[in-house]
Amino acid sequence: MGFDVHQLEEGRDFFLGGIKLPATKGATGYSDADVLIHAICDALLGAANLGDIGLHYSNTDPRWSGMDSKYFLKDVTRMLLEHGWKIENVDCTLCLEAPKINPHIPEMKKVLAPLMNIEEADISIKATTSEKLGYVGREEGVNAYAVALIKKE
Ligand code: MG
Image (cartoon, rainbow, N blue to C red; front, side, top):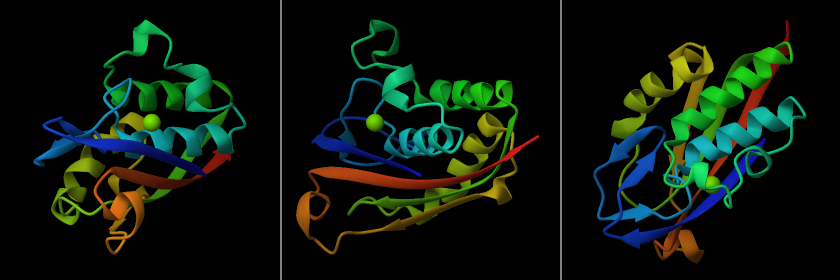
């Protein structure tokens, strides 16, 4: 399982699930701050007992500054394959107040599936709000949870 949080800031591009969302606020971070991809990477790395995203792509390494997170997911998939693991499916939950995520889920799946060598049907992305409570409710941040099932080939 993976979990990630990023702060939201006015005027930033909002990259989520491998796409750029139309939004007034965007996530801040060392890379492109794609909280969904980061949670998926951690779920996959965790399932394979290969550490976590910070271990492989440190936020002190200039190579990863402003990096497109799709690279991380593709690279994590490669690592799992090298260790004999095949990805079966992933299930994710995003937690944020705005914008509405549902209309964008099909495009996210289309972008994420080839990075993991799985079908779009093997990716579940759900979204919820925080009912105005806490940092998510105040639109100060966004978080994501992901669970991955992998199989030894
Ligand atoms: Mg992150």
